Image (cartoon, rainbow, N blue to C red; front, side, top):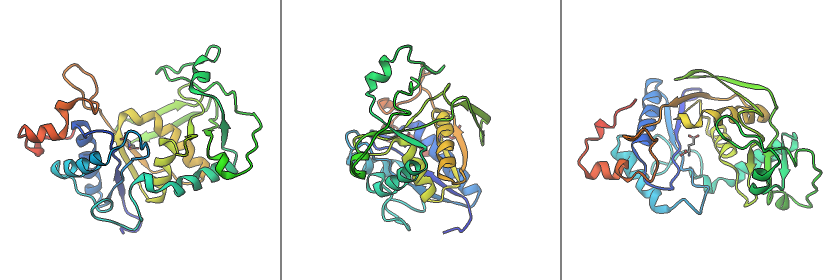
Length: 278
Ligand code: GLU
């Protein structure tokens, strides 16, 4: 391991074939790791077992290699952690949840999605995100066992009105206001798995990641994640967000855009060196 050095990561979700946008972000992550003479980790974000498929994991390994990516730790190459698949790392997330629970940073929530949607004047952020109306914030709940506590939703209690600011390596100064841009967000789901926000933070901490390179669609998630780092008492990594690749009509690429998938591009004879970094 490069003690104290740069550690970046690639964190694909195997719910479909990777497309040009993923290649763009991952090549940037690789470029930044190389320019810092650092290391790159590959982590498979396969928590959503209904949507993630093993065939997409096989495909992503093949597609990443074709796109010219190589990693120092993760599937195929191993590393110090027993698993680089999130579905096999549940105890880490439970431990993070336990710490948040003990410090009262999170609260259990019995609201259904419908309750939140139907809340009288359910407030929306400017981006149209539903802000949690706070029904369960101060409700007393008692759980006879940890197992039962882990079978309900838990939300992070955001500091309403506080500006969460950070310097993005690509976009510069960014700021979001808790309670206005986003509300009390989920950290644990009643089906027994952590939310995306908690899982990436717990993993980026455990894996010693020093810089997170990812798509700009996650800029606001960074504000939420900074709150998690603070609540867990851990210094946050640096963040670098990449522009999203769009199709001819200006829409961001999605896994359903078959024509932009790395598989199709390979079959069409594209030279992977043309998967340029924007
Ligand atoms: N797995 C997430 C995704 O595919 C990325 C998470 C991250 O980079 O923080 O959107």
